[in-house]
Image 1 (spheres, rainbow over the protein chains, first blue to last red):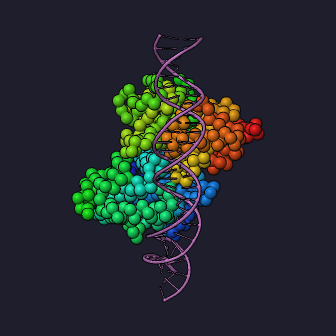
Image 2 (cartoon, rainbow over the protein chains, first blue to last red):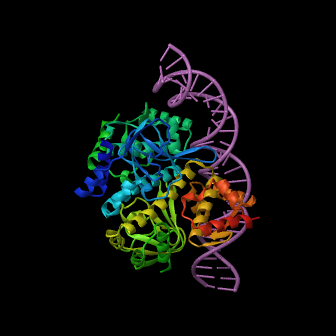
Image 3 (cartoon, protein in one colour):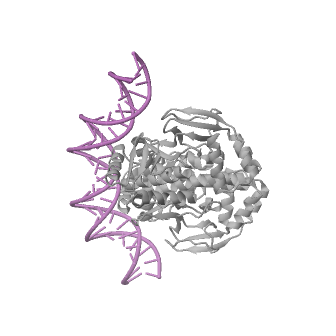
Length: 252
Length: 252
DNA sequence: CGAATATTTGAGCCCTTTCAAATCGTGTGG
DNA sequence: CCACACGATTTGAAAGGGCTCAAATATTCG
């Protein structure tokens, strides 16, 4: 399973795993499921703590306020496990939704718990992965709390660029980010109309563009400046960092 | 050390620890430090991954945007370890600041790492504590992304009420929340002026009040309704839940 | 090819910010 | 223990960013 390989690669990258650990992780089996766009995820195993590995598409963790406004709290790209903290936490109050037609693989909670049971390294690797997700969350708090619309969108584009690049899904100046502007709005805490305006602005300034679910970056440096973005909170391999520099020089 | 006892109690509450684990946790020793208000925290042991246990006061994790605006990403009350995920994560880009004159106890990173080294239960307990902090973070994202000023403040008051109650620091209709309105603004992503208006409104409506760093709750139900607050994401003991009901009936 | 969505554009309004100034509190030094 | 000084809170008015409502135009998908 490709997604699992990517997931193990991620864990190995940030927590150096030994061969035994990698083997037992690679041996994980789960149940595949295909989701339509905007379809809610529910574990076929019945527990709210089962894990969901993304194989394709994009999954969002969402919440609705009493006024019916939706906020997307996190997004998960292929190779990531949605809400990996759910392994040990109580069930969360958020709902997982496919933001695009997606394939996921459900993994029984017990499968992962057993893996952690007698391996501190694996437990720590999961925890570390979970911390990475939390680091993104912290950036989102800053984004929502203290940045204007344009900066929010720019910051998000930078973040996703790094994450997709890390997963090897960046095709030089552009990458696929399969969301609608409405969904984008629910991520950055704005209105679809406002998001549209902001994208127009970025386009006119030849900084970046977003069309047909693809983000195209014309000027990486300008985008990071607008978005007040510093990638240090994300895991990056040197190759990707180099590639990012490349985006800049190749731009405009 | 009182703070450590509280910390171990927390861990024991959400992850049932056996006696051995509790003993080794209770044996933790650290270096005390007193902080002035708005003083930045720096570990005396030199590592960015050392842990900081709050003994009194209030610690905030903060970040400054390029425009000089500050956002507080998390607050930590006595008995909590600031940013416990730092045990295994890379150093974060956020800064810890004392929001009020505070006492903390610094614990060497190696001390905690050793505790986790041969104990999956302790590792999981730390991870769980870390997930709890993440759960709060998610609520903040919703708060900042999709709620109006009044709702944000109301939600924060509810959250802090539950957290202080959980720590046994609630003195029936009120609790000490040692922040200025400016700091409050940096938590809820607003302006001090706006926060002040909102508090006036809550006061006039006899829902809650905030004066001399004390939050006084007149009408718990109204406050939770205004703040769109559901406490399920927080750890609560039944006694506190009962107490909350009490706040309501005792009100107005 | 047609229906349902998504994107785009425009105008008016509202929430929040900014800027300013007055009042109130609190901590410190005498 | 008092007075002073600085920071915090309060209040007001004007400006601005983002929202709402609405309608036109593009896309996408069956």
